[in-house]
Image (cartoon, rainbow, N blue to C red; front, top):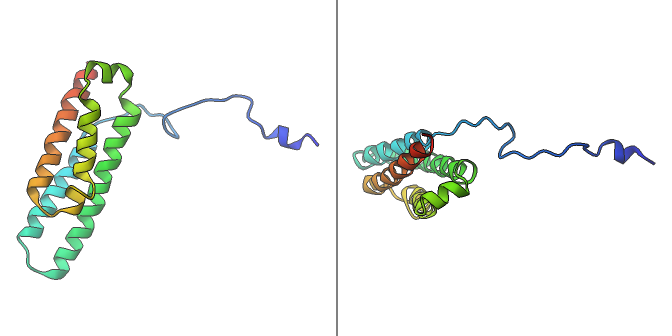
Length: 133
């Protein structure tokens, strides 16, 4: 029976996502990280347990989005020539994603931790825009 062969693709393509748009910007990670920092500040200033619970839930969701946007840049935008020109990139991304994760802003309500995350994103952003010239 030749039916399975009918469904075999004749052309193979590869792309970094389902619809390669080519649109990358560290601003997405920065906006979410700014939200994390603002939530931490509001959390610290409020004693209402229900508010604080909601704040932590939202902060963790935003921190997860920071990680997602950083990973997209790290794995899809930056290529070998970028890492050769900026050897600190792998370390920056590793540190930034950890600062967004459970051992960082996701697991902490300290605005200082979120501030350190924003600083790492700014370093990545500076390099990103240098590669776009």
